Length: 220
Image (cartoon, rainbow, N blue to C red; front, side, top):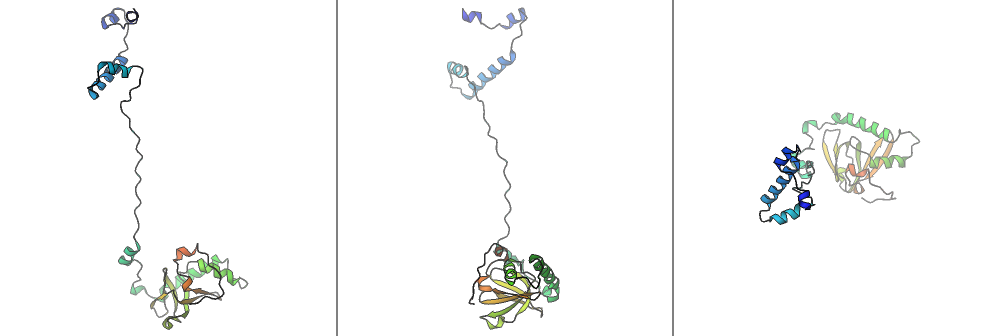
C-alpha cells in the first residue's frame, strides 16, 4: 500500500495532471548508475542500490599540486673560477699608479669606520677595527718573515685569499706573499697596525664574525 501511495508519476500521468517531473534528479541518477555499471561491471543491481541508498559516492578526487619552485642555479666552484682565471690581473693592468685611487677610497673607508682618526683615538680600537675591515686598497708592508726575501716588500693590497696577499709594488710588480710565518704592518694617518699572518689565515668575508684574542707575544 505504501509503495502505491508514494509511486512516482509516469510520463503519461504527469502530462495528464500537468505535473512537472524533476528531470535533473532522474538524469543524475541515470548517470551515476551508468557510471557504476561501466566502472564496476561485476557489481550486481542489488549491491549497486545498496551503495546508492543514503550514501555519497565520490566519483574522483584530485589533490591540488603545489607549483614547482625553480631551483636556483649554483654558482661556480672555486676550481672552476681558478680554471677560468677570473681573478687573474692582466700584465698591462699591473701598474701601481692605476690603484692609487683605490688606496684613497680605502683610507676614507677606514676613517669612516673609526669615526675619524683623531690623535687621541685609542690604538687598540683602531687595531680591532682593522682586523675585521676590508683591506683591499691598503698599503701593506712585510716587516718580519721566515723567508728573508719577503721582508721589506711594500705595496697596495689588490687581492686577499685565505692564505696569501697579492700586492702591487711601486715598481709595478705583482707579489704574492703568504700569510703564514709573516708579520705585516698597515699605516694610516700616523697609526701603525701589526698583522700576524699565521693568525690571520681567514678570508676577508669571514673576519667580520671572527673574535680575535689579545695575546702578549705571538711567534712567527
